[in-house]
Amino acid sequence: MTPPRGTLRRAVGLLDVDRRRVALALLLGTLALGCAVALAGTAAWLIARASQMPPVLELSVATVAVRAFGVGRGVLRYVERLVSHDVALRGMTRLRTTLYDRLAVGRTESLLRLRRGDLLARVGADVDAVGDVVVRGLLPIGVAALLGLLTSVVMCLFWPPAGLALAACLVLAGVVAPALASRGARISEQRAVQGHADMTAAALGLLDDAGPLAVAGRVPTEMTALRTADGQIAEATDRGAPSAAIAAGLGQLAVGLAVLAALVTGIPAVTAGRLAAVDLAVIVLTPLAAFEATALLPAAMVQVHRSRAAAARVLALLDDSAATGGTGGAGSMQDDARRPLPDLVATDLACAWPDGPTVVAGLDLALRPGRSVAIVGPSGTGKTTTLLTLAGLLPERSGTLVLDGAEISHYGREAVAATVLVGTEDAHVFGTTVLENLRVARGDVTREEATAVLDRVALGAWLAGLPQGLDTVLGPDARTVSGGERRRLLVARVLLSSAPLLLLDEPAEHLDPATADALVTDLLRDPRGVVVVTHRLSPLGAADDVLWLQDGRVQARGTHADLRASVPDYRVALELESEGGGTARA
Ligand SMILES: Nc1ncnc2c1ncn2[C@@H]1O[C@H](COP(=O)(O)OP(=O)(O)OP(=O)(O)O)[C@@H](O)[C@H]1O
Ligand SMILES: [Mg+2]
Image (cartoon, rainbow, N blue to C red):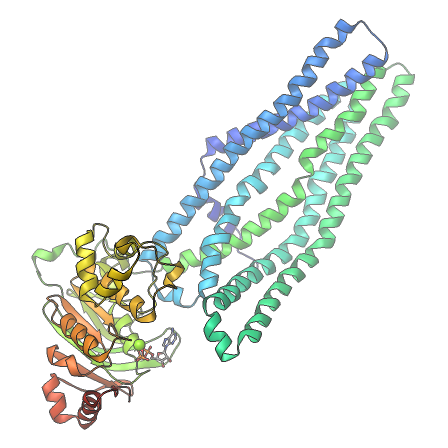
């Protein structure tokens, strides 16, 4: 699975780097290493000349130059680092923003196929790896090429044979060795990138679900998966090691050869009087510094491969989610004047997960502000799947889903989310304050609104008990709140949004029956359009339409009173419930 040609170029294009800054970084890098070479040359000259004990004044310029080059090298290198890292970090921010933008409005089913850790690896480490190509790949290559050329030319001016030998050795160290390293890296990096993604996914799974996995006795299996992924990375690294070692050895060999060539050609020239003895010191010692630039090249080539493999994964994510039905342009809901109340109409809708069997078929449903629909049925019948489909998060398998007069797929993700909002149990609770967690729905939620909505979802007492009230920071991913509190916090968030159609999945889960019924009743009476999935039947008198879902179909529908009168199963479940404890799941 070699990434297609142009993968890296496309990804680097998305970094949208500032060419002038790159050129500046290149110039600064070349000057910094140029100082190192000049330092070696001047120092060699100084030592050699000093041994001839000339008047001290003759040495003073060189002494100052040595100091200037020494200081210049450090300062220039520092400035070069500032500029190049600035370029790279800005680029990564740009690429990551593009990625998040696309993911936010793109097709969600492509994300559903990815494990959380894999997704995290792509938006995290992979984007970094693409950005690193600038600092660790392309710049060192550019600097080495420029500096190698300059040094060889200057050396030729001193003593052409040594200059030519240096050029040949630089090619050995700067082209042959990196090519070798590159060959090893090509295979190993592709494998390592996959290994890293697997490892992140396995580690995250283990950390996230440590409790359930321990109870189920599956920790050893998961640990084995983690070790396998780790082993895969180690194996990939080992595979690349021989080529890398040979490349490093070749680099050293090239330095030795350049020095030897200078000596072998220079000494006879000095004896014959064609070359000054002091210049011999210069041509022998200067090459030592010239190879500083090429020494970075094998690593740079490895970086190029690492970045290319990462680029392929980032682009796959980007392309996958970009294959969407527009971003809202033609399909935005600007024609509100024509149709004041948005409506969502499902006709003969079939709901399913990508690549999975049909979960629910033949669903008809109409939702508009002021209308409430309840969906009930046993566990696993597809209630959640139905909500996700109605919200446009899962593509419909067949039938039609029309939002405001147009197929839902016609709208962009943002436009749909602004009208139909689904609250599911796996929505993310951020490691920030309660208030900020609610403001995810709408940035301008006031403290009063927040307090009121928390009261509404039966979290008033919980809020009162929090040490800093609305400003209490919830732990990472809300590990510090109970399952029920978390669920209702998410319901509160949905309620605060300005979407006119709300889809709520088991909002009263984990509540005691009386509080649960009060909450569901309240939600069903919300003036917006609401679909509530619930396992409590008692409060459904408040719903305009109740759908009894079983075995993948709507088995019965009507008002609460209709169903109680005509559906024996419904009546039994309801009676069990009022006796206490029984639910529609029974
Ligand atoms: N993330 C998923 N990926 C693939 N298939 C899924 C996924 N989640 C659920 N399914 C499939 O969809 C079917 C219906 O599940 P769904 O979660 O919609 O049921 P439910 O009615 O909401 O159940 P519950 O009352 O337990 O929440 C399941 O049997 C399962 O096979
Ligand atoms: Mg469910």
